[in-house]
Length: 227
Ligand code: DC
Image (cartoon, rainbow, N blue to C red; front, side):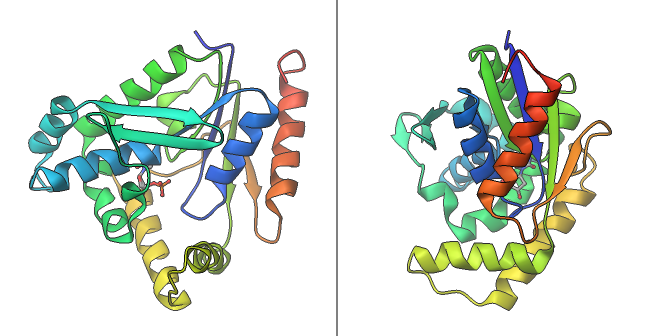
């Protein structure tokens, strides 16, 4: 059983991955990037030539491969059957296909089980995604919900792509982000939403350091013996 579970949910580009990593570092905890799980299942399904719209086939993909997730030096290393796919799962074509696995209830059920199993193996975790405070860890010690306006999120994504030498159009990125928000918010199972008891932080105009500091202070207040 974990002694400390912190959840961070929010839309793409809200800064939650970087914040989760840094907060985990400050709290001497491990982080879990649950988006990487949906991405890995999707990549395995594409490689298997599976019909992504067929839920039972996606479940076979989940059950037919070994998926490993490990946080090493601030990075989530992901492998499928022992083969490293850490970079491959970030591909933008793949990103656009993740919504199939994300909206399949039986796939979500299995991934939530994998997330709980991961937590059970670590004393302290900071986990980030869309449904971590609402579905996966309803009894988490502290729940956060990060937001930021869509234009700022698109700008952050563009800066990341520019840094990787992949120039992209801001307007197109914004449209892709809005499409993903819509599909994340409107799915029937595990939709993107703040848990009732989550602390919502709007990160528009804040630096990563400022966000991490704010979250850390909340953890200090809520869990005085655990920070
Ligand atoms: O955080 P990310 O961009 O890596 O997530 C990729 C996709 O996975 C995102 O569009 C929604 C889905 N996802 C989800 O449905 N539930 C989670 N807990 C995490 C991600």
